[in-house]
View 1 (cartoon, rainbow, N blue to C red):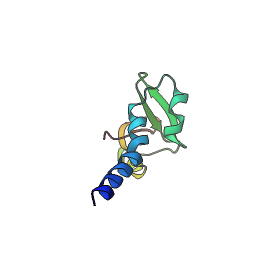
View 2 (tube, rainbow, N blue to C red):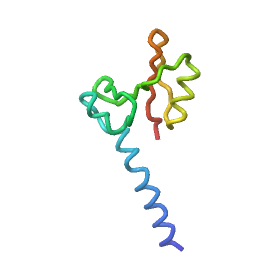
View 3 (cartoon, helix red, strand yellow):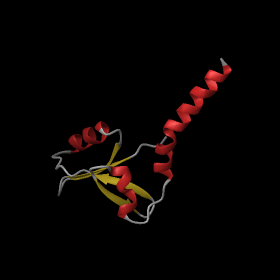
View 4 (cartoon, rainbow, N blue to C red):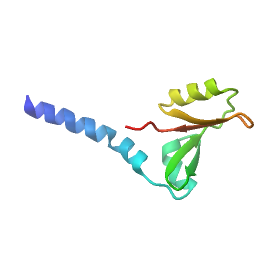
Length: 92
């Protein structure tokens, strides 16, 4: 039973390891964020964290929040002038 518990905890830690590294990883330019953002446009903010900008225009703030939730992130900024939505990874 103890061995099964240790295996379960090990698998749990291993499965979240990439997500933890992605949050801790520092970026120097936008290309460092490509692997995290997928189809969205990667942006490196302040040489510290990666932010993903969606390619599709979002017409209001609620649409931005919904989009970020759908990809498992939280909305950090919505710019109404150009309908850009910035999402970020949630803190663990």
